[in-house]
Image 1 (cartoon, rainbow, N blue to C red):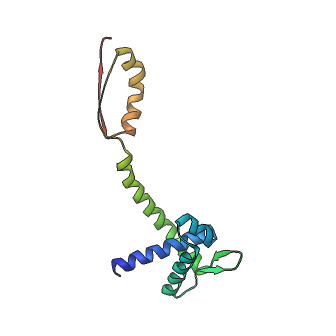
Image 2: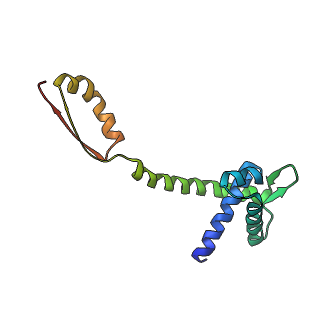
Length: 136
C-alpha cells in the first residue's frame, strides 16, 4: 500500500469516525471543516473500498452498522494514540526552556522559593535555575 493510498485511507477512516461519533453528516462536516456532500462521498468511498456498509443512513439519523461498530471499536484506540503522539510533539513547542537567574533576599529564598522549587523543577525540566541570595 503506497503512501498516497495510506493518506486516502486515513482521511476516509477519520471521516467515518467523525460521522459515527456525531451521528450526523452535518455535525461531522462542521467539526472537520468540510462540506456535508464531500464527507458523504468520502465515507461512501471507504464503504466501496471495504465492500461493506458501515453506516445506516435515514433522513433523521446516521448509525453504525454491526460492521461499522466493529471498525469503530478498532479505530478509537488507534486514533487516540495518534492524537497522543501529536500532543507529545506539541509539548516540545509549549515547554519553556533556558536559563533563569534569580536573585532574592535570604528570607524569600528560604520561605517562599525553596518550598516551590521541587514542583517548579518537575513541571519545567528544561529550565536551568540559578538561584542566588543577596544579603539585601
